[in-house]
Amino acid sequence: MRVSQYIDMLNEDVAKVREEKGKKPLKASEKAVEVKDTKVSNTDPESGYMHRDNKPKGFFYLDHRTVDGKYGIIVDTFATAGNVNDSQPYIARLDAITTRFRFKPKAVGLDAGYFTAPVAESLARRKITCVFGYRRPTKGKNSLRKRDFKYDAYTDSYTCPMGQPLIYSTTTREGYHTYKSNPAYCQTCPLRTQCTQNQKAERLITRHIYQEAIDNANAVRLSEQGKTLYKRRAETVERSFADAKEHHGHRYARYRGLSKVQMQCFLAAMAQNIKKIALVVWAFLFGLWLQLCSSGAFAKKLGKMTTCKVI
Image 1 (cartoon, rainbow, N blue to C red):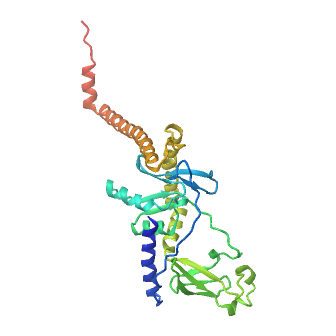
Image 2: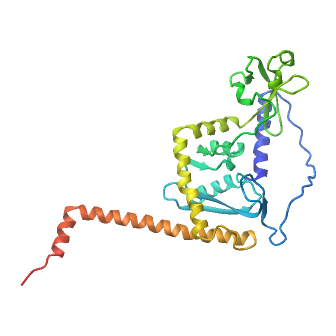
Image 3: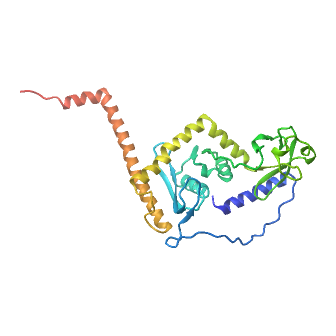
């Protein structure tokens, strides 16, 4: 999903939620000119500088692959610059695959880099079960975290560990509901220092408008079905990348420019698919041959053909 598509979807949903909550529509945001410093390679400007935890730093390209869960066939390979977030092209590639091959996927297994609110919501709307890798939440300043507060969908409010409610306040342009506590209760609360550093003695909690899709995805990840599906991902996608790096020169970009790197991705995927398809066809023909051999008529006919008459 492109950023512009997500913003359009988010703006539409935020406007709908604010109307349901009795809030005034947000004013159209003025697009401010954003000045951003970006590292650009002199030898290959189309590559992107990647800076991630537990990953090498430098200019890279990324290959976003989609692999069939049954046979391990690569059904899509899409190259982007190294500074593109994994989640950005995913939904567009999924729609392209389902349109071209008329697939009706029931479940997908994705790395933690794809676990974002728009991806979870988009998959939920397509009625596709999604299993994401675990993403460790960022630790805030307060000892009491969001998980220590209980959400009540009926009243649309949170309850703190001391039993006091956090009431809905508003919905931001970024797609977050905000819930605030009553400072009158928090002033004398014994857990105040653990709960908030706010001078007003007010605790604020945010909840994304797509939080239900996020919670459902987390529930699937913890289920037995989710664990089985994610294990299958390691046997398909991860194995596909390992094979490409080890035997098909996919460890490095052999060319400069996005279009040429995309060509390299196509060539590697084609070579891997030829091997996979050959194995599948061989297994099918071998199984068919065994069935024929086990049938009585074929064995009898084969016996006549191999009988030698001694003169």
